[in-house]
Image (tube, rainbow, N blue to C red; front, side, top):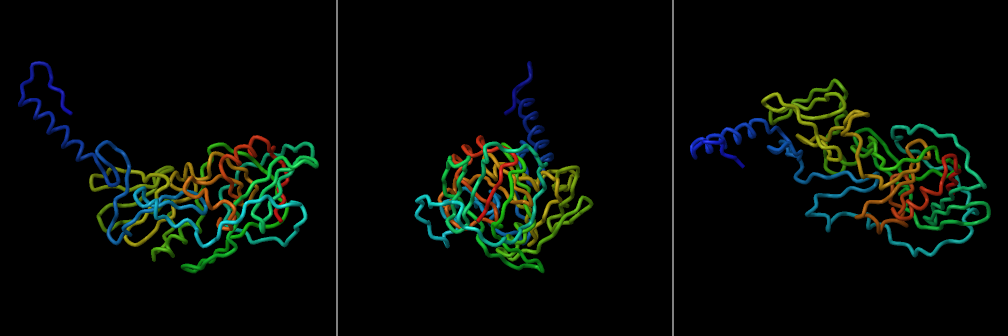
Length: 312
């Protein structure tokens, strides 16, 4: 909206408006509106539907398609009656998955023999203090299957054994593991390209993908740099690009729920996106133990760093 300057006539007002609009159009770069808000523009050969990352096993399509999202319906919903005897099911160790960036270890010792017990078969979690069961709730666990693509092989299971809570974090960011990009490439037939801090990728539309500081973005025809929005996958010219570790585009907010408990090697106890709440109680995750957010909040404030996590 143009505001007339004092003593300026209609012609001056219109002229100022045209200049402002032209300046805004010139400054607007790829992936932005004139106001600088970021959005995604498809490049040549780009899949028609962008996806938004949600968490390790949760991907939500654009808002208009949420009602039709694939929400791991291959697993039937179990009866969620609490199983008895949570500490009677030992089993072999499971397979590892790609580790995320490590959270600093906290070495405080828990009190009163508190422990978390998870049953993979029953898909259930208990929090026990001494001989008292304080919490008994359903959880999602690893799907115990994997895939191969572009020379890489991945298997997703929740490892059995005894771990411990290394650290706690509120409003955690999810560091997206490499398997996610290979999974997306396999689903959409995309080439997987791993970016480095020195990468410079020329796109078919004349723009260039580069890394500047902690941001991955595109340089437009005017030389302006526009970072990609964290949480949106970078897909152009039939390729999905893996941002370098430590960049903002590799760290996704609101993906793990309100809290996380880090048990090491990329395995977390974390929350569930609203669109996937029904999947709690199923074997659908990529290795993490996933809880309803309300249950996780209760557990988070009761558990101390150092608490054993027994997975059976």
